[in-house]
Length: 197
Image 1 (cartoon, rainbow, N blue to C red):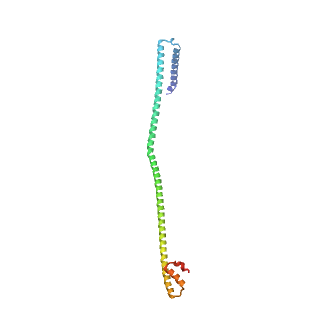
Image 2: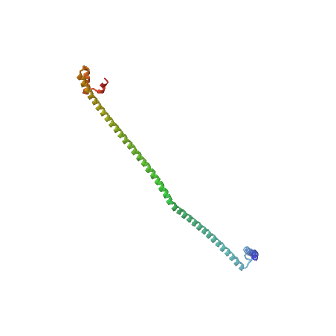
Image 3: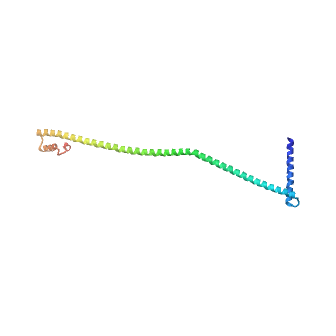
């Protein structure tokens, strides 16, 4: 194994020297092609043809490598686009759920607002109805009170009439007092006005 390690640099050095001599030979042929014979010119042509072929192969390899890279890049782009589309498809149901929730919140808010407005109007109507009932009760009570007052006044007149009759019958009153009492008894004058007299 050590022998191969030592021989390998020598072989490489020898191959390098052979290439150098070939290179100098080709260089000399280029400078003065008529010095060399026909065989060497054919070799030169072969070498030129080989160099051109290698150059074309290298260009083709380069184009191939560029095309491969383009294809790889396009494949990566297509794959990334596919991933993005896949994520969009995956996100779309979530976005729809968010939109549905937002709509539900909006509709709930509108429903609550309408409910509050309806409750407010119902309450106002109830208050107005309650006030009407209270006013009606007050009118009824006032009417009842007036009727009671009229009844009491009539009772009082009746009592006064009875006393008047007794007073006139006793004959102790003057003519003027008798006339006043008769006016009160007939109702031409308010009984409460004369009560103070």
